[in-house]
Image (cartoon, rainbow, N blue to C red; front, top):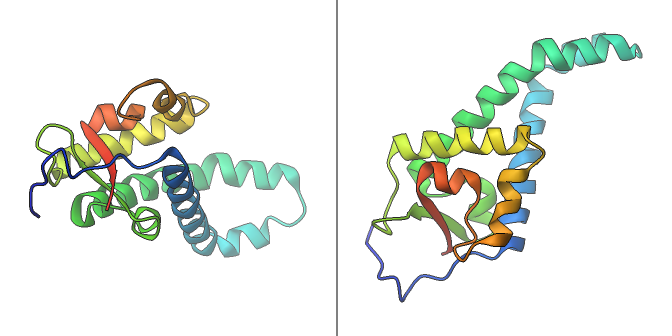
Length: 146
């Protein structure tokens, strides 16, 4: 991947990042539903069964799938499917180039933590010049337009 000068880069808008988030979460949700379809349908109409299924059987694979999905796509393609659709990508904050697999992993884990804590990690993007979220800080990344 070529290294762009900072003059060529334009930060992704928060609305394009939000749209990418929605697309990615829908994709992961559909994958999890497909993976657990039999258990979901067998839970019947019992709220207790569904809560148990969500808390005990689905949450671990869901978190793991999110981390693997975001780590792989951001590292390999520079963007998740949602980011590709919204024409934005993730770059290294320091080099303005492709991020390492380790940075991508840290970013993916930071994203999960942002979700756990009432999306506070996403909200901080409104209060800094680089529109950086908690997971951008943990992975040392920026999100820019393609």
